[in-house]
Structure formats: C-alpha cells, structure tokens
Length: 398
Image (cartoon, rainbow, N blue to C red; front, side, top):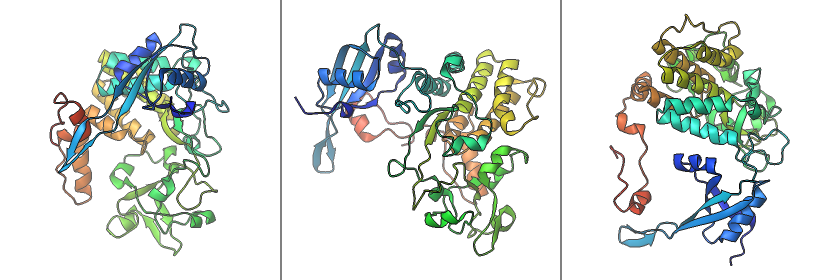
C-alpha cells in the first residue's frame, strides 16, 4: 500500500448536476490519488470533514488513453474517481463556516447550492434556479450584504458574511496579483505603491463607465481619474483620444484595496469567488423568468443590492412593469455590482447578447472581431475527445 498522507488523498470534488443531486442521498464524488485505497479514502474523508462517517466507498480507475502526437505515442494522465456514501448518522455539509472557524474555506452546503444555482441559470431551468436561490436565503446560512460596498474587498473585512466562498490568501502563501494587473505604471496614490509591480493591464471601458449613476458608491472602487508622479492628469477626456495614453481603454478597476504589506506582485487579501449579492440578483431574475411576470418580491431582492450603493434610488413595481424592463434592470445591476468578478460573459450568453456586446466593444476600440455564437462554448480539449472514443464531439466552430 502506497504511503500517502490523508491530506493528499482527495484531489478535488467532482461537480456535475448528477454528483450534486447525489448529495441528497449522502453520496459525494471526488477525484482522488490514483494509488489511494478505499481504506485511505475513507480515512481522508473522515479526517478532513468533521462529523462524517463513511459507510461505503466505490472507486473507478481510468488508466488513460493511448494518444498520438505526430510520430510519438503516449497516454493521457490516469485518474481515479471515488463515490463516498456517508452513514445516515453523519453530519452533512454545514450551511456555512464563519470567520474564525478552522474549517473556513472548505466546501459547505452554501457553496454547493450556489454552484447549482449557477448551473440551473446556465441551463435555463428557472424553477430549479429559483428553488436554489430561496434555499440560500434561509437564515441558517447566515449570508447578508455588507453595508458598504468597498468594505467587501478589504483585508480588515476578510471572511465577511457576504462571502459564500473565497480563495484564502496569506502573505507568502497563495497570494493574488490584482493590483499589478490593473495599475498603470505611473500610478501615484500612496507611498507603498512604489514597492509594487504595475503592468498597466485590465481596464473598465469608458462606454460601460458612462452607464453608472454618478452617485453610485461602487464608483469609489474605480479610478477614473488620477494624477501621475509627473503631474500628468489622466482621465477620459485627456486619454481616450490618445491610443498611447494610460487610460485610453478605460478606467482602473481597483476593487480590492491596496495591501500595505504587498511587495512586488502579491496581495494577501482573500480572492472572492462567490458572494451573496450574486445570489440575490440571480434569484430575482429566476423568479421573474419562472413566473413570466414581475413580482414585488423580485423587485425587492434587486433593490436590496441596488440601494446599498444607491440609497433612495430603488425601483418600484411600476418602474419595472414588464418582464423585459425587469430583466434589463437585472443585467445592468449585475454589471455594476459584479464588475470584474467573472460573471459578465455567462450573463450576456444567457440573455443572448454576447456576440453583440463583443462586436460593440471591438468597434469602440477601432477593431474588428469574427466572434459568433459558436463562441458561447469553449473548445473541448482533444484528450477528452480521445477518451470519449467517438462519443464526445468537438463543439461547433473549433
């Protein structure tokens, strides 16, 4: 038996609609170390997930497929999948882990339901999406919005109750590189920024910036004007006409606060993957799509997110008195609320607006794009197609 430590046995969970539904029967699916035995898998689950007791472990081995690259023959990586059945007495996944809990960052029921909500929105199963959103709003999960938008993304307010799941970062371990990716190389805000690498990367387009309400407090996390160390004022008026200017493409999405301990490229602020504002806006959308009617409840859910950053400017039912008006309001609000959090592409695809948006953005930059609806899907890796032995076909357009 291979000498494998319990914390090296489980590689990652398998997240599919089938595996998520199996959780109702206390069955959990993982990719595991190829040499792990059933006994080692049982030990790993029971040690890593407090309160669990494993009743049965089923494993499936895949030794990889023969694959040719030019004149060279090889094999794809082998892997092992385990389906772990827990006893009826086992404690199921907790609703959520609070700040200070030693298990914070591990999988929770809140994370599982969020992934299902996203899946059902993607596949347009509105009734199931609505049910998942309602589940996440139950008091036992403990999720709530942070009063001030900019405080979601600060070091002092890590692990706040709006966060459903985040990648934990720490100094010297798994740090992220947000500021280097977005800061112009002549940015001059605080003295410690001189210690930081600046790559002058991602920007928020000026066209999108113009859609914000000037009173929106989310603008406090965006630098749409700054003065460089050399005294040059950068803003839309000065930079948009000049392709060589720092802000030619748009404003700087600061979002995460500056980490004063950051040096070079790294920041220790936790990187947020899912948060409650995402859930509330998706649930509002799912309710309206499922009922094909705008309800006061859906408007209230949308306003819960909107009025945090725009106090006194919530919508009334009369303002959004048609399904089309409401859905547009949701799409707009998700854009302002969740900018640069990895949601926009799927939102635009769900609304049937992805191709139009990409072409418009390219045009605003003086460029052309050949993007079409085939790009709604990513290409399937060739090794996966090979393993399918003719069953799995490449997506159209690739």
